[in-house]
View 1 (tube, rainbow, N blue to C red):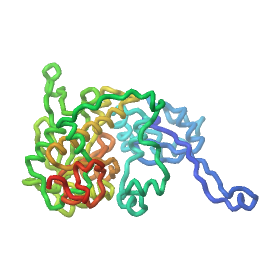
View 2 (cartoon, rainbow, N blue to C red; view 1 turned 180 degrees about the vertical axis):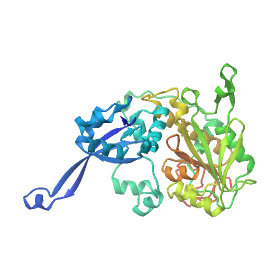
View 3 (cartoon, one colour; view 1 turned 45 degrees about the vertical axis):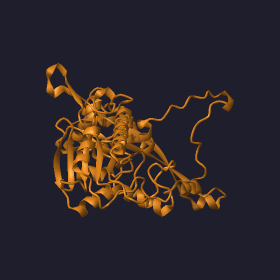
View 4 (tube, rainbow, N blue to C red; view 1 turned 90 degrees about the horizontal axis):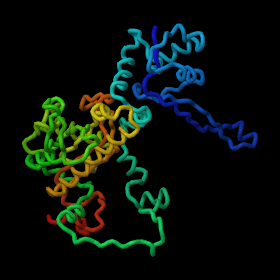
Length: 399
């Protein structure tokens, strides 16, 4: 049998504190520290505890070349090595190990940097209900946060004395400045108002559509696209997967947007109750977002970006920036059309990926955006200090 270490692996030493009665009786602090070594292997998507001996074996066995198991056994022990194979940290060429080997091969093919892969795959959620948790524990408003956590760091950093500052002229505000002032995160969507089909299509074309293409050497298979947002290397690895709840002329359900054709691919029809349930679970029970007529899951195709930035220290950062660029374009586009918009990274990636049949080792949910018609009354607080969206009494300006 041939074996090799898995491609991406980070070892985290972690300390846990436990009550120790013997320590307390002896005049100590009553605490006992337990140190554990946790293997973070993204292809397994779970933490695996390892012993110092197992760690030594993993450090000695290459991940880039196959080694003969029988030749490793005298040094590390047959039982220890078999245990690492069973845990999925050592990859074998045996038929029994094909499933783990295929998952490891997927990560290898995507050219992940190990630190980035561990950060991404071990920060994903499943079944979290952060919206309800925030309300229950009193962490929803800034005033509540200050009461619980104390004063935050100052809003800006000051690096010199005030008298040394150089004042800059304030430009005369124009239409775009007014648009920026109206741009705000919407937490109050009109649950009775469907989004018009025209506005729906306009939003998708503006934010995710291909505004131009360039076929390299005349080959359409190698075409790159231009969007209304910048993208690292011009690669645009972010796909738009849609959960539609209330759009005129469109059945509720799951869709995938095709930017070149400006078309939707229907994936699964859902009735209103099922769509609402999935929306709430997707955004971790943040009910003020789940009510949006359209939720857009921003899904990263890592191989699209890592094809150029292979095992690159900045590759994952570029992918996350891509999502941020698109969300700002979505906000501005929605604001221009008189719609509300939001983005949240507090999402249950596991449930979203299951619903859309996404393999997270290939493409994964990074954030959820949404847009639609605002409600007439500000029932959930929004940040609008200049009162350009809401009147002081909480009613919508311009309604």
